[in-house]
Structures are given as structure tokens and as C-alpha cells.
Length: 404
Image: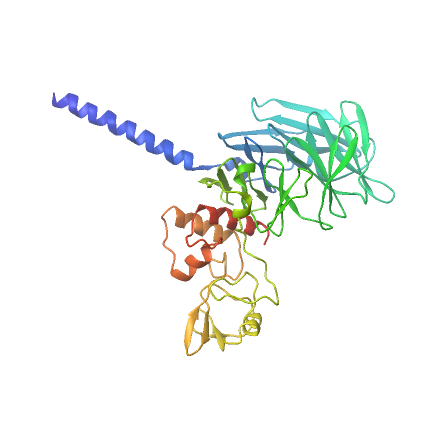
């Protein structure tokens, strides 16, 4: 009887450990195949989210939502640009002078298709787009950059007023961003203006039908030109995508995935909210706006702080030394009315005065109960100013870090 009891206990412990391991695997995974990539990008679609990138001759893609699948494809040349859609990863490669090809990597079954492009001219390979069996590349005209669509052996020229600056894919369609900030949908040989932004706008995919600007605005591609001011989270659209050499963010439905420079991918639930409730992005520094000592924007200098807050007599660093120049940092103190008030810079968790990937990692560790933040750092971590540092702040912080 005792032997049966021991065996039963042992089996129960094995099952429990397996469940714990499974839960941990679901909350964090390592995507080492992306570690050698020149740059990692995020793609957020209607049902899938990916991180993808490339080395000199290898295309790499990792689907992280709703499941985790990593695949790669080698090309017979040098990869110049990559893109992604809901099911496939694509790489534009150069095989020789005026010789180009596109490799398609199917993320469902791992199949690879390699097609040479029927072109004999030099291309601008800073970006390209591919979807629905058509590839889009940029060529240099006499006065502006034009777009060629290639399907099989046929090519069609898409006119983009003022010239194309960048190509990208969103929601199953290809788009061109013009030098004057116009976003044009490329389809069936015609280019249609969807919305007008400022010249040389910096955009990232933010889910099916949405773009995220460098200032933290969500912009609709529906043609309504709807702009959601100061919003950085739109879970109903499938949200997020911001890429940099160190951090990328992608998401779908109500879950965000954050990839850090150590190739660790962590998953965080994001509560769905209407767009107008998501005024979550820290505001950029405005030289004339008043300053709240509890929520100082990144980039505000000591001189600006004194100018816009005349009651501040002096500013001191964490060691108690007076500081007269440079950016204000979390942990600095302001002397006013006979007392010192500890300052917090929104998003600056490590006291560097900027928002960077180290701040993202520190908040991730905090949310995993690996660290407890001091009170001024907690204020800095509360990016959306709702009274608590949580997963929503993590996503906003990661997106902000990608632009600094």
C-alpha cells in the first residue's frame, strides 16, 4: 500500500512539474535564430504576430502568436530587404549586377519559393513589399522613384506622386509611402491615396489596418484618415509593431509579445479598450509647456526645468551634487520652498535621462517579481499615468524605446 502511495505521489509531482514547465514556456521563450540578424522587425496581423529578420543570405521568421514556429530560408545572393504578411516571410535579394530575386517562406508548412525578377535595371533596395502573389520594388526614374509590380513574368508601373520613399505590407495589401507623406495602396495596377501624413513620416505596422507614427499616433488605413491622438495600444486591431536592433514588439488580439536583445520573447495580456480610452503615450518634450515634477517628459533639461518651474531653486543628482546642465534624470531632486522633491522622468527607470531598452528590461523584471522599484522609479514606470506600473506600461515603454 505504501509503495502504491509513493508511486502515486511521484506521478502527481511529475504531472505538476510538467504543467509548471508548460506554463513557463507559454510566458517566455528564446528565439536564438534571430540573434544573428542585422535587425529584427515585428509584424502584427489579424490573427498572427511575427518577429523576422535576415543575415547576409538567410531569411529568418518566428511566429510568436497564436503559436510559436521558427523557420528560415537561404537565398542564392545577398539579401537587401525583407517584409512579412499574414502567412509568409519574403526576402528581396541581389544575385549579381541588375539581377534580383524574391524568396517566399511559407510559415505554415515551411515551403520555400524562389523567383527571379524579370528586370534588367538597377533597383532601390531599401525596402520592398510582397503579397497576394505580387512583388513590389522601387526603381529610380529621371526625377523621382517609381514602383514596379511584378507578377510572374509581367510587370506594371505604379505612379506615386512625388516619388516613393518606402514600401510596406499591412492587412494583406501593399502600400507606398511617398516623399511628401502620402500613403498609397498598390493594387491591380493602380495607386490610391489612403491618407496624407507629414513628409518623410516614420511608420511601423500596428496591426491590421493601422499604422503607428514616431510620435505615438495610431493612424487608420481605412481611408477615413482617422487619427487617434496619443494612442499606442489598439488591441482590437491586433496591435503593435515597432522594430529596432535591440527590441521589437508585436501582438494580436489581446496579447503582446516583447522581444529583447537577448532573444527572450515574453508575452503579456493587454486589456481591450476603445481607442479614445488609450491616451497612453508619454508626450514629447514641449519647450513652452508647463512641467509636472511628478511626470517629466524624457529630454527635458535642467535649464528647461528651472525656466518653466521658477520655484525650483536648484537640481541635485543622486549623490547630492548640484547639476546645472544636461537632461533631467529619474532620481534627481529639485530644491523648492525649503525642501527637496525627488524627480521622475516618464519611462526612465534606470536614471539615464532617456528611454531605452535597459528600461524595458527592468520593467519586465519588475513585472516578473524579480525586482521591487523605489517610489520615484515606480512613478517613472507608470507610463500611462493610471496609478500602477503594469503590462500596458511595458508595451508603451517598449514602443517608446524603439523611437529613441
